[in-house]
Image (tube, rainbow, N blue to C red; front, side):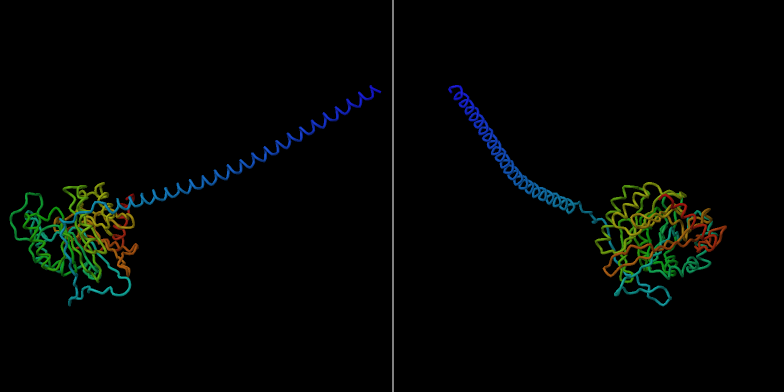
Length: 417
């Protein structure tokens, strides 16, 4: 009996021990489950708090970046607005109206009151209306004037110049009665009446910034400007710029003599262009007297100053002095004719290279007064003489094979510019 009781008790103890183990396991599971839940809740709470904090921090950073960007933009604007202003106090600006309304059948001043306006401008190279006292006077420019008169010299290009709106030359020499010649190899002069050569063929403007403007001293330069101005020809050069009203459009002209100071002329380029802007010029043309005689390729100084002029606001750059043609470059949508060569040239009785050209560009000014982007240029190949074996001082348009030869020559010189 007692053995049976002992077995029963032992069995009960085992059962109770097993029940307690099950209970302990359940408690551990519940504890683990609760711990897991608590951990999950904590993680969720932590993630939420971190996320909110990060968003708030990011928003603050963004606001700071915006503020910084605004400050930088403002600083940039301040820097731009505080850019050193160009001093134009040394520049003298003259404003003129080109009035060609006369009875000679030449071009007439028009109106730009309605719609876009087109302005065709012709540029030519060195015009030396006179001679050097050491030349053979029997074959000189002056001898031709005495025999044929003023209308002879530009007779073969007159119709071209009358058809445009503005004709511009480089006037290389003096119109003076001064007798005190500068100490130089060549010095050119002619009498005041030679202005009739230009006015009789519809030339309205002349650059006088070149190495022959003072061939008979400062007084000879002053006389030249006075004689040209009295004839109604707009003169410009050095510190003198001019704004001419053509068909109601303001065309600004400036001439830069580079030969003496080279890249130091950059300051004058900036000042003169700024003065033309201040005067309301809608089209700005810069004439440079530069380069090396008989060289067909522009040098680094020519390129640098030409690009500077366009960067500063020039719409066209015209060059002369080498006495031969150089190439044409298109830079930032604007044209640079590096050298137009000689034109009506009394400085040599028989140049070996007589090729020259009239460079024409037609500008379109829209109703807002701005220059439209276009490609309207016209190169007119010419010879500085109507004779192939001498200089008869009568520039003549070329035709046929000769015209094509000069065009190809210009194209070749323009390669790589």
